[in-house]
Length: 353
Image: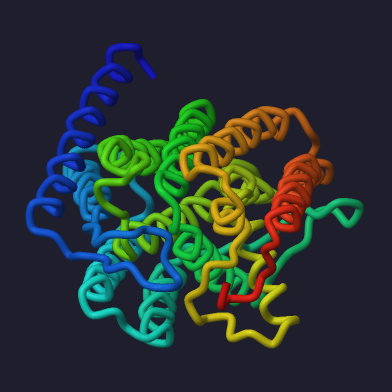
């Protein structure tokens, strides 16, 4: 890519960031209020739905991409299917921010959006595994892709409960993915991740502690869905499709906390879909760690994961999945540190505390 074209892309991204910021400011001016209760950390009514800015920036970028840049589009059915599914889910999530739907309603909307993406042809067909080598997924590709999209969407949504945490991770992850896609000549992933990064750049200043506005489901579900889809699109970086691991690696801190909490609650007989305040990041805040520090730690995790992505491309197909091990080690250390703080503060995972 020529330097002049790259500068033009950055200028367009800056304009999208301004669009996002204007959308966020509008949501502050005409707020959907998130009222405090026993399961929430904030103490006063705070606007939510700031993710509208992210959605506006991304969709405007996609509209420009569709009309002006054929070289950076997916095949027509995939492009339309993915974008329309993401936008439809964002609308449902915005309605959820207003009405507070039951989890089953949210999950149904997510499943339909994932089904549209998969039906349009965006499906994993093979994976490279350590020792085993390349495995053709066959018909399993569809349920695996659906499971990944739903899992990623909900993991990001569940983790959006502390100022700037998800927004900072998503900005750094999408910016890193943009750079990787640029180096690989994967123009759709490059453009989509650039637009997503621009959206979060416009939103993040309003979400820094103490947050003036929260992302809301419209932002967290949309971001999780888009990142999940980009992971599948990024699998085209290599013939073995092992590059699908890039996005999970970049947002590994969010996925680890979500899975750790889901498994712990399931083993304890707790309803896994019921709102609560017992994620690791929430327990860290309850033990006395400031939200700003928790967000900074997760941003640091993401920068570490970005360095692992650079290592990822130096390894052979069967070795690449092993790059997740250092990320896992860091997250286990984080979990032990939080558990230690909980013990010293006299906290447990009991939800009535």
